[in-house]
Length: 79
Image 1 (cartoon, rainbow, N blue to C red):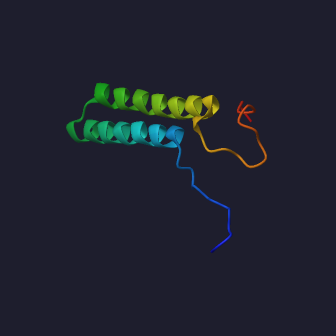
Image 2 (cartoon, rainbow, N blue to C red):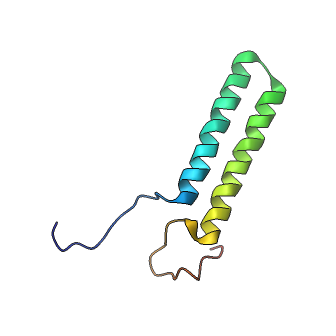
Image 3 (cartoon, one colour):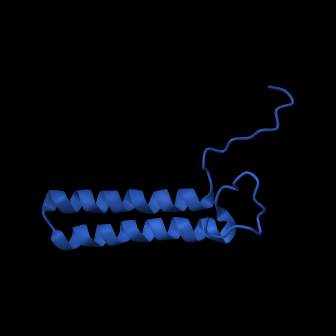
């Protein structure tokens, strides 16, 4: 593919990696909570999952997400 300047990064960005990383830890915490039958630990995992979603969105809004086609880096507000 010589001369093809189109690079598709499939969402690989700091925002995506951070959000998914936190969500993976939250899933493990919630899974373990089910195994040991701990409601408090499950709730903590659910809160951690919410933190992961928020962290990913905030980082994307701060410019650490994947650049959408046709948008400037300055125009990185909520769409």
